[in-house]
Amino acid sequence: MTAPTTATGPLAGLRVLDISTMLAGPYGATLLGDLGADVIRVESHYGDESRHLGPKRGTERGPYLSLNRNKRDIVIDLQQGDAREVFARLVRTADVLITNIREPALSKLGLNYEQVAELKQDIVWVGVTAFGPDGPYAGRPGIDFLAQGYAGVLALNGDPDGAPVRTGFPAVDVITSLLVANAAQAALRVRDRTGEGQRVEVSLLDSLMHAQASSIGAYLTTGEAPVRTGNRSLYFAPSGVYPTRDGGHVVITTPGEKFFGKLCRALEVDWDTDPRFHDITARLVNQDELDRVVSERTSAYTREELIPRLVAADVLTAPINQVEDVVHDPQILHNNMIVSTQHPALGELQLTGVPIRFYRTPGSVRLHPPMLGENTRELMAELGYSVAEVDALIAAGLVADTADIEARRAARRKPS
Image (cartoon, rainbow, N blue to C red; front, side):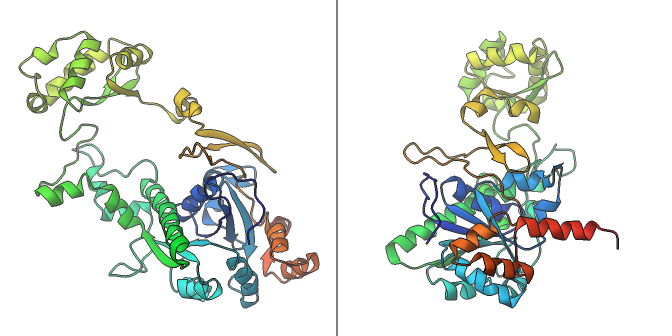
């Protein structure tokens, strides 16, 4: 049984327990919430580590706020055996459980697949690890940065003559979060057919290997290893970042002869008749000179002059936007990828939007990122606990609501 919900998304009526931390697991659960699932965040009194990292707004932290919309929050101290009954009641109402807690803590808290399946036989249990649940690296701690090292992304990212560089955003975690959501839905499809739940595993390492089909896959099929190219392409030219007169930069890339011709017409040059540049092979051989003349020509325009000219000529181009530009980009705003929600302590919050557009059953950002323990009382009432029972469990430290969390924080701040 799940709580009544106003969700209209394709996953409305499903309940997901999010018992994961940081990014990959929680953001996968967030996407399920975006699509209508009732996502319950289960946290300790300390809370997710992302509640303690990064810039603050009021009492909340940016990383947590940005990743955890469309969830309700309950605090249960799973380290105490007496709290397990609360958790057991919650599990029996759930369809999916997502966790990235490592062994042996996973089993000590009663969260491994077998333990959870005893409580809810048809549960879809999704485990997220750094390197896989078994094998030579099993059990090691790991984050996005390490996966980039193991899977070769660091070796391929950055300037050819420079040091390896990680991606500027947590690409591996985000890719993994998408696979978490996809895996959960696929397992639910199986359950619809067979009535059976199952254990599902997703790892950062496997997710990044999947994402590198065009680089590692090409090496496996041809024996030719990819090399670091910076902003250039291995296969065609010109492709890179080019300056403008006002100190800005634009991306220009030409994956095919027709796009090079369009670039020449837009910039009013005849490079496509020059023997040095007349086909892809020649342009790759003479790439340094080609980049020089392209840069010289783009520098004749400001960014605001150049981009419309190139777009009008059907050239593959983009501005190099700063974050401040991105959140005002007209297409991003048109796509509803910046949305507002109301937070009880912080007022209006702007968050990234839902990346999948359903036309019959649209997803939405319905709920603000919850404060720690914000929905404990509401959820326990749904589970059949009386107000007096909840009060007793909070007093015993087995569960907590936001008021209790804040009282504990205030007590820690008092000088002894």
